[in-house]
Image (cartoon, rainbow, N blue to C red; front, top):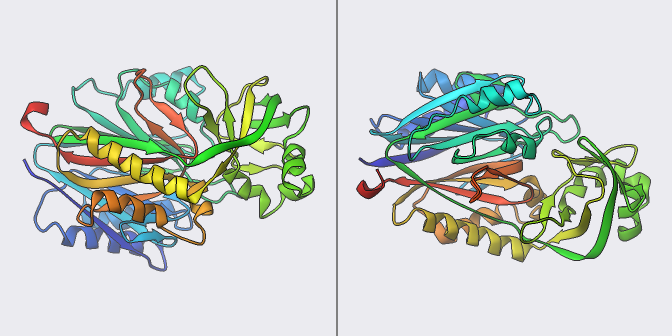
Length: 388
């Protein structure tokens, strides 16, 4: 079996035309190969269903999965206004896509419904994309079957409006979950890392409820940051600081090795931090700051880790899921993290990706792990006979 892959990228006045052109560009690279799965990554400015309609008008019944982003990524770098379509083609592989509208991971019925979608086929890999604004990422991972080899992300979009979309098959929408399961002939390697380190400031989370971190050291979270950075607390609730707070995440002390990174989406008018997973009151947290050089080193390490996990399989496609904070950090060097990945993978491996609000990776403990602030590199390679 031969595994082929191609990536197309296009921008247009509307989502349908951009999706159609991106799909056409990818198909032209593959000739007559029959494709197994299409991954669609699109800027939140496009209407999701228009993008789906454009891609599907050319690809027909091919299973599709996708997510919205603040900017899409290819091997050429960052594309703020482009739809990206990645196609995987393998004659022995199969893909099945599911769409769950209005998914609430806090609902036992919804969690049971999602768990029931996973097949128990050996060697299966699943891709999952959920809403980055309305999904508790940690709770979502906890609701998944322990044996699920799951990779995915929480989609991003407009931080002020809090809207993000997912694509599953011919359907799309916000607050939904898209799940694609790949079986037969495709091997995946996953690597991840980040470049944020503690800088000496320590907090106690003194009040937190749901998605909102209310107080650090007994005062509103924005006041704690105002004391450190010198900007008045009121300025943290308005642009640009209300969004830029994401590049200053918290590292939570826990039972595992290292700090658990948790990143705010924005600062609310009352000074609280809006998160996309819960943080327990009483937690000890450290202020983290990112370094471009450390992030580039982490990007290369993640790519090398993913290649090593392929165990000799030839890379065919890299899916790169990068936290939105990286886009902010590399504003003066757009796409620098992709260039770092290319140095490891080489110019011949196509790359597709986008900026996300959280990453989901397999865990040695069984249950998938929810990350903030990371880059996750997923490489699809051809499975050898010994792996089948």
